[in-house]
Length: 99
Image (cartoon, rainbow, N blue to C red):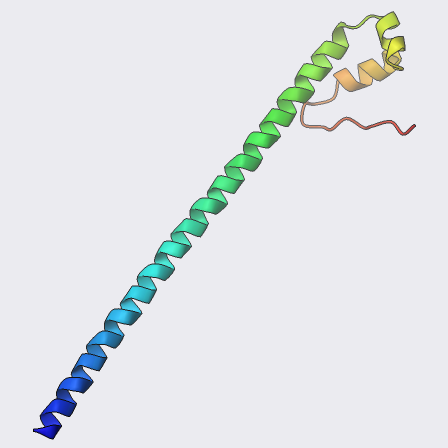
């Protein structure tokens, strides 16, 4: 009788261990999936921020192209500065002047 109880206890322990390890594996899979989603979400946010930045540069350069020489001088720029800035690709950052 004692050996039957011991065998039953060992069997229950083995079943509990299998359930516990299966639960851990499922949790790991969920965590891995969530980290993949958060990584994708962060990448999309960076892409959106980059697109907004490029759009702002295009708008700024288009506005700069409409200014006349007097307005350029008011901003401390020359027509050469304007030409250089307007003809840059939208992905190139504006070089800031040091004062």
